[in-house]
Length: 153
Image 1 (cartoon, rainbow, N blue to C red):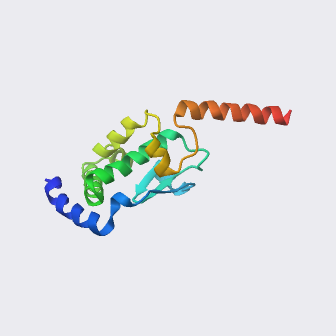
Image 2 (cartoon, one colour):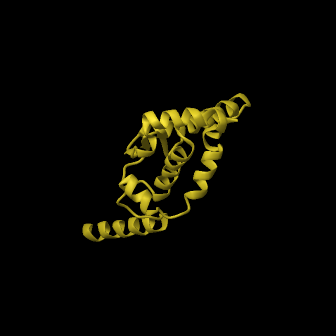
């Protein structure tokens, strides 16, 4: 049903708003996200990340970029309509805000994609200049810590 209702609304908004041509804008160090136990959130076209850029794992970028692609695929209105509907439904049924914000179909899809390396498109759109996998990120952090220890000795 949402597809039918949202399709015409999304088409109109995409024509006016041009959401498929808007590049995401990352904002790091959003410490207020800790209160909601969130690593990041997409308020399209802005992507708010709890940590600094250097402390952000590639899986967080992948997760949030998945939401950007979902918005491109389904449209801004449908994405937020489905998300808010899920949140309210979960809360009304006695679920927590954390459960409400992490169990929607969009979130499940994004959690599944976190395990994959950042694609060329992810890197370009996010202007990411770090590691493309969490494994590589962890190795680089270990090397940086060893270098600091050696320099302090």
